[in-house]
Image 1 (cartoon, rainbow, N blue to C red):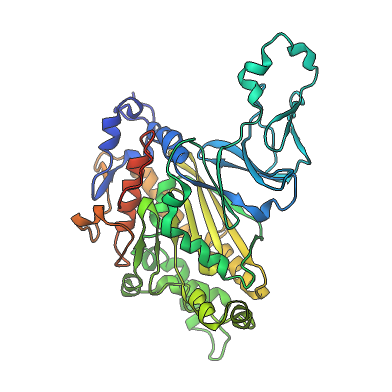
Image 2 (cartoon, rainbow, N blue to C red):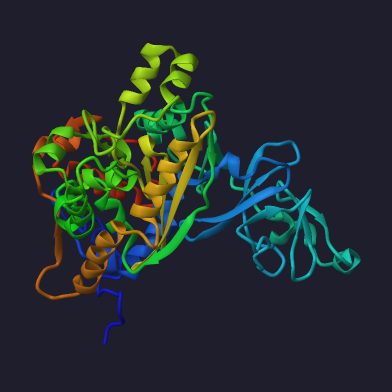
Length: 450
């Protein structure tokens, strides 16, 4: 009997079968449930693309470090002695022990393995080995252990956001992201000083679903008014029954837009960028009608001038997907990271950023949004979670093998780049799976159309 999560196609040995998993308007269920497909994603997709590691504000001082994963590879981001940022594989070359065991901290000028006390500089190079004389005739200098804690060669700091590409060869950072970096630009520029600071902690929790379900959902604009009726809809209903003159709570202001109509979401538009990136909210979004924050406009206009400040604050994008696994909300200063653990399990991280130099009330709103919408104790996010887990549970059913993404499909779209389309289109999801198909194969480095 076949084990759970394994198909009869042996995808690791059958490239043609992998290619057949993605069609123009649908994808095979094995993309979500097959462990061989998941292994290929880790080995090829997550190693060949540029994946978010962390933010520079998490490691401001020499020796500060932050541990995370890129795909399923453990890495540590560290501030080196020359103040540059290094990303190292978090593995001792001696016996394979994880060197940095805490999520974050300060290691000083070197890392020390907790097993045999080998030490490494913060660029990964070996500093000292206890009883080193015992290795004099052991060929230590020529063996794999001499590499120390191996540094990831391809690390890019984009305005404080640190990305890396594990594979030595591949698409450049600039070619991979292109114009999509304008979302990160806008979030940073919302600070009167042009600086962000990770604050408020990072929520971490596990969903029993495939990571791509969360990515798909971020540009799915036909579900909010349905899936969130019980949460956001209830909040709106309670508010409507409040006595006349009751001040509108910030929470209601954050909840209410989720109940916007199909027409609203359709008109707000979707931007589809190449290489799987895209965002909802081109002409409008659920973040467009928040109350003004006293003092914020004055700070922005003083920093940028009124015309530029109006341009920055008028760009109210909803959800920006950075393929493969990042979700950014610039107007509310949040970032979510969908970290694959297995074909059916995903670690979710929800981050908040402070706009340096902006009023505290703006950061309070970001924290409240993250708590109400994205936290493990949230209200709205659990609606989505139930949909993910229901899907993961029944994708094994024999009745259907394919998952449909056909809404507003146009046969001509595959050759187009950087297009704005209707807000309820599933073009962006098709864009993601075309990109998935390119990078799931080794050495797929050329950028192509969407």
